[in-house]
Length: 376
Image 1 (spheres, rainbow, N blue to C red):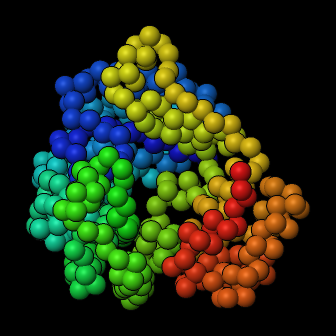
Image 2: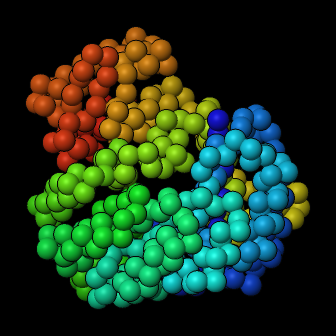
């Protein structure tokens, strides 16, 4: 099985925190669609005829595309890769794009999962981080999707936002739970260099939440999600049983995927490659029947490090026998030795053949994962 990720770079405006490649050059949309379909056709053999299990439209803002745009992309993917085995097709959307007519249109397409970037229900913070929607628009967008029959809905939230308190965070979570969505992704704010929010931080216009508050916000997150019936299946992701994101779960288990569009990443099991992060260059080169991309062949140390980093983020962790089968006894011994102090402290749990983070270990997961990696 394999996955396909489609990067749709168009945004009406850029959010203050976002570091993903995007552009406001919507006039290039028709050229983008031609280039995208050309890339998908050119790379027909990249996944070695593996059946496509998941398809994900991310961005940018994929909900900036029209019905005819989506039909063009779906027709291309169906022709080049087939969708007979595809079990999950996700659309990322901005709440204010999901009008009644737009959601009705989506029901005529193969999408069976909607992911909404809500981020927070706190109006002043929405304005601060440059989101286009209001809290009411976000709530109404979820309700429209539900009314139109979508039964697999995910929302994104951000915590650790400027001025956030445990009280505000609890309020955000309770509003999220009241929507009865199947999946919630929660990410701590990071100040990415060059973003508008990072510049505001450098100019002392805003302040980061302190480390103690960050830990408390994450503790609240874990407790409230558990009480609401969501399983904590990956450090930043929570789902009602049976509704984990198949596409993102595949990333954490080294399933090959093709990423198409400017800035998109791909993985074939042996190497990674990523397209140029420029819509103009992306289009220009594909019009010449070429691609502008970089590639990294993964050596054993890098593959081991990625195995540790991705598997320990999941609630299942990994099995030592799988680690030894993939990388050999030297890596098995290395990992076992470095894991032992964390096992003794109760931050890692070793049960029979498996190793995973404990509830307390999740709070210091970055430290644990880093210590178990090989220094390259």
